[in-house]
Amino acid sequence: MANEAIQIQNLFDLNETMAAPYLEGFEFPWEALAGIGDFIVKLGNLLPEDEYEKRGEDIWIHKTATVFDSAYIAGPCIIGARTEVRQCAFIRGKALVGEDCVVGNSTELKNVILFNHVQVPHYNYVGDSILGTYSHMGAGSITSNVKSDKKLITVKGPDSAIETGIKKIGAFLGDHVEVGCGSVLNPGTIIGRNSNVYPLSPVRGFVPENSIYKGKDEIVEKNED
Image 1: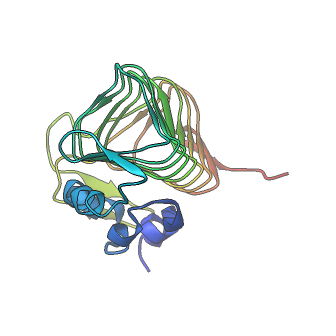
Image 2: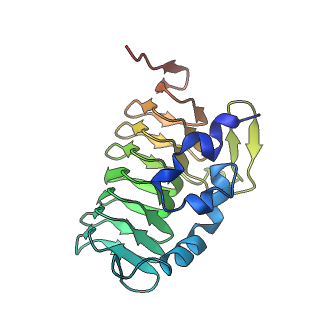
């Protein structure tokens, strides 16, 4: 099947997110971006009140989560169990943050799904994106979600390019992806499971699973020895 490597089922372990019933309805991850906010509202209203506290309009925070007083959270938003939202974090809404995550100081989130155990701990911007379980973005690394010419985004898959018809798409990180400090993930970037990105990398297109991205012309397979 064409572009099988960038299908949702091959990027993410859906057992590691409350968004599983929603994501199962799509083939490719960018197809899920438009309805994240509506899904959060529906899910939030079903969450057990003995586990989640509702704070403001369409904001549900697990009672074991830690949210610093200086953090800003707009709904719709769900913050999962044992997650930390640290000082001056800026969650602009439409954010489903899983369990045991870190949303760090001055990190900004908008229209995202963060699976369990995701860390965006220092000065990150993550918008119109989905981050798989145990993915980690180093300090200052960001997702760029709009092309400089403002045209609709084409995703460059492993087999062929796909016209999305969407203006804003960030990045999709498979499970256990490590993004080095100061890197920029350009619109529509997809990084397969268990891959690493060198610090200060401008990344565009598709990075296969189990790879090390050293530069656009140097993507090498991981040596497991």
